[in-house]
Amino acid sequence: MRKQLAGALLLVLFAITGSAPREKEAFEEYAARRARLLEQVSGPVVLFAHSGGEDVSPEASFWQEPNFYYLTGHDEPGAALLLIPQTEDARAAGLPKETLYLSPRDKPRERWDGLRVGPDDADARERTGFAVVKPVSELRAELERALKLFPTLHTLFPASAGPNAEHSHAGRWVAWLQEAAPLTSLANVRGTLGALRQAKSKSEQRLLRAAIERSMEAHREALRAMKPGLHEYEIAALMEYTFERAGCERPGYSLIVGSGFNSTVLHYADNRRQMQAGDVVVIDVGAECAGYTADITRTLPASGKFTARQKHIYEIVLGAQNAAIAAVKPGMTMARTGDNSLYRIAYDYINTHGKDLKGEPLGKYFIHGLGHHIGLEVHDAGDPNRPLAPGMILTIEPGIYILEENLGVRLEDIVLVTETGAELLTSSLPRTVEEVERFMAEARKQVETRKAKLETRE
Image (cartoon, rainbow, N blue to C red):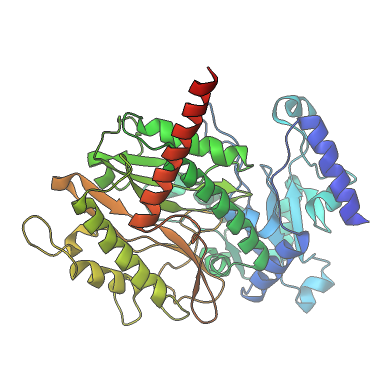
């Protein structure tokens, strides 16, 4: 009955706002994560949602703090989460295990921003999945009660210790907690949460597979459309349209379409150059769907066929990627050193296959790491060098970037670590030289056939 009511509420929300809410996992999934987190800490945990003012650009839309979303599935601003271990003293004091604190509704503001869930709404529990929902104004008093029983409070510290850390979302809330509870020891829960987030549940895997499939379709559209004379931004716009039309919320990161010399620039994102015959084009594009982000890179020949030199470098990168993917299994690492290093496998392959124009090995042109975890963030939380375990989903992306040849090649695919090895989640997208050239040739043939039919009708 509760699920039926929740579904009805979603339909009502769609009818009022004119847009469908983000797809979420079952409330039980978020509750299980909160329970696992509480098992690993020695005191209460408090986390804060984004306020909605983190990005003040005109086109900004609200996006939730990923750790908060991971534990709650709540994607509205101004909320807080308090988890309290259920010790005998905590139960005797009547402190609930978990409480979601919500900002009061501002109905005039909702005319501009859409409906919100308020702490006093009769259906707040059904819509959030929390048995205890309170106004955010009550958080401080509840914290003070809990901290009479526990000496340590766990929260998120800033992700880095740079000069702007204190002005970050986490930094501001750490300062607030230090003022609110000056005698309490604060502990950083970021590492514990990151470790939990690295192993993806079945429902997370399902959402990531959807993001990957929609991202691959965008790459197929790029393969179909690619030709000399187009601007990089035309391919980027086509790809973004493709996955957003399929229901994804936004790009997972700045779209990269780099041709010619731009193919050698790792994070090139201007996308303004007109592509020329003979260029290679590095396309690094992934969609964010239901909060989860794919990350896929392909290198394409603008003319539809690689030159001999481009093909040679491409096949070295592909060989390095295949070697690394074949070695993925629990216990291996993404670290740059060590006996179990996947990076080392890829680097050694590149460094022992082919030469630059001076006859020197190519290893020095592989200038970045081998890959990273993906999830709620494109470079997902957790220790990137942690030994791999079943359920982790990560990219494998070797590359060679030779500036003096205007030649950059990167291939980025996504793997799911299994009990015995890896499943290649991007296997249906062309990877080899032959597959890429055949796909592009067939797409051009179809365009020519349609054009001929139209001319015949005229």
